[in-house]
Length: 106
Image 1 (cartoon, rainbow, N blue to C red):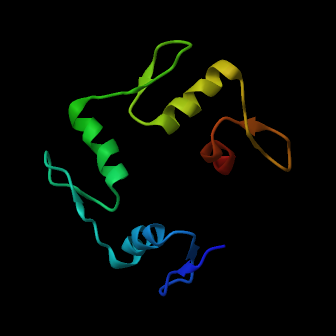
Image 2 (image 1 turned 180 degrees about the vertical axis):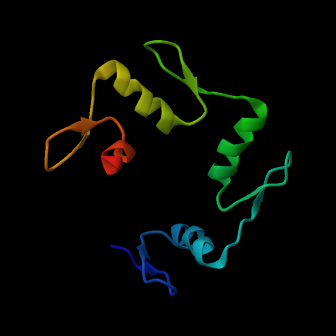
């Protein structure tokens, strides 16, 4: 159930806070400011990831090889090197990829 609907595009959300965050797409509002460089972001989580470019923090570490990343999603993609997982498969030829962008390019 998604009772909170965007009046601009009709997209529904299960929580009012998610709708409010979504509406920034239409308004262009970027309320979260980086104190280091002044760049603005739509969400606090995007600001947090950005701030790591200034601090050099890389809190997500691969337990197999020790390589570290500033975003968890980058670690997850990297770990596929070790696991061999290739979750994105071409429906026509059957070739599979570690990233959806590689399948799109294919």
